[in-house]
Each structure stands twice: as C-alpha cells, then as structure tokens.
Length: 118
Image (cartoon, rainbow, N blue to C red):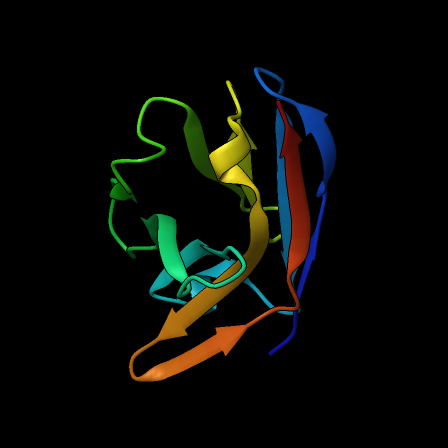
C-alpha cells in the first residue's frame, strides 16, 4: 500500500489549503483514513479521520484544535482522501501525514509541510 500526500505549502494566517492523499488501491480496502500532524518538538497527533464502512453513512472525527475549520472527505472514484483546511492559524504549522488502517495494519505516507505565517 502506498499513500502519496500533496498540497502543503506556505500560507498566511486566515488562509486555506487543501491536502490530498492518493492511495495505491481502492479506499474501500481500508477501515479508516486519517490525517495526522507533527510540529517540531511535538508528538504526532490525530487531526481528522473518516471511516470507510460497507454500509451507508460515514463517521468523521476531528481534534478539538481543528473542529469547525478543517474538513476531511474522500473521492471514491479517484481513491483520494482530502483535508480542506480553512481559517489557518500559525499553530497549524506542522508536517501533515496521511494514514490508512485496515484491521491491525497501519500505513503511512510521507508527510507534506504546512507553514502558516502570522
């Protein structure tokens, strides 16, 4: 399984970015897709996740720090998971990682740097 993240960059506070993560296979191969981030000197933390159930309905989960500003979504035909980031703050500066899980298996993509200037 390969995960390819893109879309990071430098943006001013209050701006927006959209991260993309392309999976090497169908997103329906996974139980959950998620975005994590890691700032210098900090541990990697969960930003947002979305479940990929067989039945109808999906569950999304957001950290308190990004709730109301970030949105996780998928494009099932392109096998891509997105993270729309609005109202960005300097404290959102970090390397963002795409994550995919299936049962006990955990896959990570290479990170993409997001830098928010004040």
